[in-house]
Length: 192
Image (tube, rainbow, N blue to C red; front, side, top):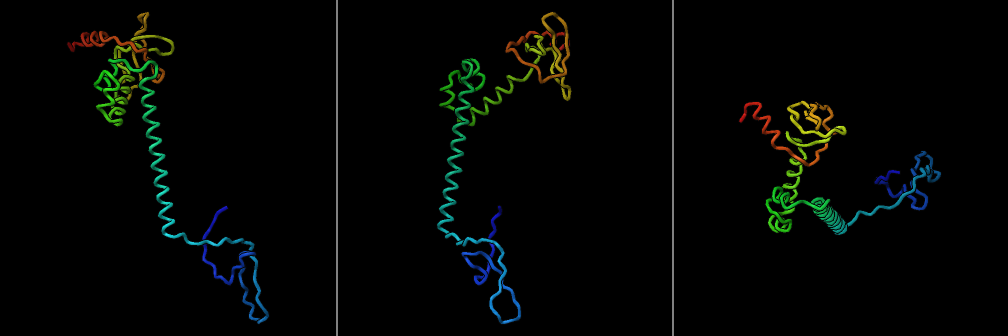
């Protein structure tokens, strides 16, 4: 049910029975009215002090929610860093420039750490030539990554069979990387 605020002449209002509209008959026989069936609740304009107080409470509630959300985000970030035995000293050095998490905390703001971590994580998740991957149950080494609009990854399986997969989203990195594959491909291409 919708609520409306309308201005009604006092003579039309019977607070116990609702809104009545007077009928002009031209006869002087009394007060004829149509009962509208609308029940009324008087509305009193709040004072400026009450409005200011409500506004202050609203601002305080928003600030409290934002603080809570920020604290949740920070703890979630810490959990992500420490999940699965956490980042290694090498990972911490690559990500933050410090090999101890506490040292990073002491020298970087939360925003700086989060930005560095997100960039580092995105780079690690990116498929590169030389990465060992699993595609549709087959383990192989990536020999070519998508270029421009291409969505195919080329790879060589352990059996030596060369594959080209169109379902790029199904690729899982195993965590191993063979840099010598990239070097070998550069040599073949005459780049070194």
